[in-house]
Amino acid sequence: MALDKIIDQAFAPAAQAIARGDIPGAVLGLVTADGQRAVRWRGRAQIVPDEENLSRETWFDLASLTKVIFTTTAILKLVEAGRIGLDDALVTVIPDLRQYDMNAAERRLTFRQCLAHQTHLPAVEPLYTYGQDPNTLRAFILQRVWQSGPPVYSDINFMLLGIAIERITGKPLLDQPLPEGFSFRPNPQLCAATEHCTWRGRVIRGEVHDENAFALGGASGHAGLFGTIDAVLDFAHGVLDGSGLSKASLEAIRTRVSNKRNVGWEGSYAGWHGGDSCSDATIGHTGFTGTGLWVDFERGLAWSLLTNRVHLSRHKDSGILALRRATGDEVIALFDGRTRF
Image: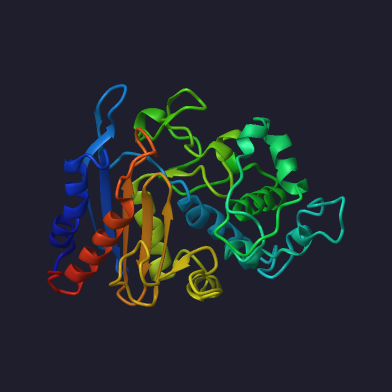
């Protein structure tokens, strides 16, 4: 079935979610390894204070898609260039990490462990409540005696990786080169709005939704990247056809480090956001604001669903998990020429 016909039907779950008022708007994009693509969109980029329609050119706060599109890719490119090794300790480029305790567990953490969330670090910490000076907060991240626990999906891992990228390149994240269609400092008028933030006292639009990334200056290794659907599909196509990463890097992001985690990405598993129809050769990632990207290497197919589901508030049931799963299952059923029901 042609991608244009597939996407018309695959967009149905998102259209229904918009009609129910679960989410303000959504854009769905598909791309194949040979470069075919299709995009559909509907709904509002903003409903408060003024209503504005969403379009194909709308920029989304990609939230934790930053982890795979920017941070993981940047680290792997540095590995490809011979600047670091995946199994090098972070202290090779951040020697002041826990500098007051040479035996601290953080000083033994490797790039691979942080990328695959195989560390003792916590999931998240409200760093923004400690102040808004980016340099002080970076120092706090490096010197904090982090409470030890079992491996969990951790923003802290990627904050450290973001600091490492800054140290290696000599440039702050805000000034890192990015492909067309991505930015850490987008034009707010082109962006989908996110939450009415009680801390900042306004509807967030064109500035990062994640409070910690905002306090760190607007960008961090875990969040801060904005992009359009076509930019995300360009990135996905580069992963699919091998033009975006070396063979070794592609092997890294496709190889399991744990039951659910690869380097940077999630691997498919029962009940995950990508749906149950994905092949075992599928990787994916999601973002808190309502974004997601999945790449099925066996089928040579990738899809991205971008929503502003936190507009106006995260404190509601947007049904995003069910929407993502239904969309993924619909995309694959149609691509395979099957009928879901």
